[in-house]
Amino acid sequence: MGSIVIIGTQWGDEGKGRVVDVYAANASTVVRYQGGDNAGHTVKIGEQKYALHLIPSGIVRQKPSILGNGMVINPKSLLKEIADLEATGLDVRPYIFIAEEAHMIMPYHLALDGLSERAMGAGKIGTTLKGIGPAYTDKFSRTHGLRIGDLRNAAYFRARLEAIVAEKNAIITKLYGSTDTFDAGAIFDEYMGYYAEIGGMIRDTAGMIEAALRRGEDVVFEGANATMLDIDHGTYPFVTCSTPTAGGAAVGVVKAYTSRVGAGPFPTELNDAIGDRIRELGHEYGTTTGRPRRCGWLDLCVLRKAARVNGLDYLAVTHLDILDEFEEIPVCVGYEIDGARMDVFPANVWEVEKAEPIYEVLPGWRQPIADCRDFDALPVNAQRYLNRMSELVGVPVCMITVGSERNQTIVTRETVTL
Image (tube, rainbow, N blue to C red; front, top):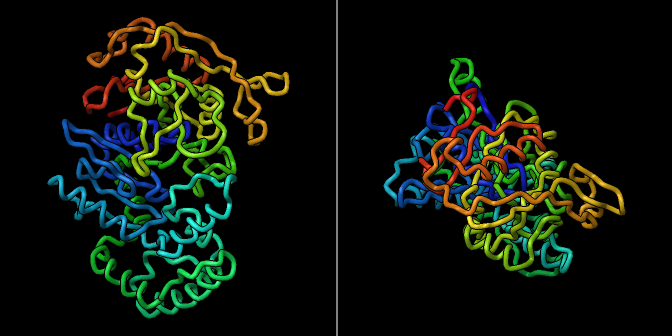
């Protein structure tokens, strides 16, 4: 397998955690390379569900799990996630490694996230209020970001923190008119307490990854969020603040239908009983926020863009079983925008908002597929659905999930080693 990148092709919630879990079986290391605890990946083994927000999905198999330098990490959230995993009986601390270059989410990031959303009013982004945007803003400003490795030098960390907190308090009071300011000393004590627990996990993770690849080991890179939430290629400004996409060998995870959380254009959204039914069948409620997800039909314009941006080699199709009961399944094959046809997702949000889906209606299979374990066992119309998706996107399908259990997986491409 070598190294492989697992990427969401839509707006998130495609089932990436499930796909990573399958690939992690024979990998030496699993790496989360961007995002923060705004993401939610779920792995289900038997009756036990593991909800992961920061820690890579490989932790469920007790594989070395790296929180990479592109992430923004809230140490408080990380420790809670560790405690939640330990409560299930899983020993995780020996397998977690944190990049010293990863930036930290600070208490004022959470406050500024909320203040900014409230100030935007009806034009708000629909953030998860986890402080992700403010933390990435500070990272790229170069003068306000604090990295996990800074905790190793208490004097340096304190001096930088005091200067940053003074400026953040000025923004909170003068720009937003709030009196809820922060005390640098209290934050310092809090974060040094976190360091006492996670300090042993902080490593030169880039060196670890390089060494694993030099030894010829398999490494899985796990993306959070998804292509259509990418800061450059997504539905800007309704995007995340990091880059979930990849430019190399990659498996794109695609839900057999489409869902989205929060604000932003969604051409195939179903604001009707069918959309509600898909939501209930798919248990489409956010792992991080608990918010009901917006649901709609599969959009191949979105998928084509994801394939182009990421250079996808394969598609892993999840949640196919959710479509079992539908007599007809429309698939969006293009858009009509101002009277003209477009076959790829537009770059500009104002064009997307005007997009009218052009549907190709495929026959449903109207029977359960949860017990199918190879492609030929699927109903003919389910096979046609997958083949048509692959044909119109130009990327072969390598994996299909037909239920939430680990063994409810069909592998269709032997060129992908599992």
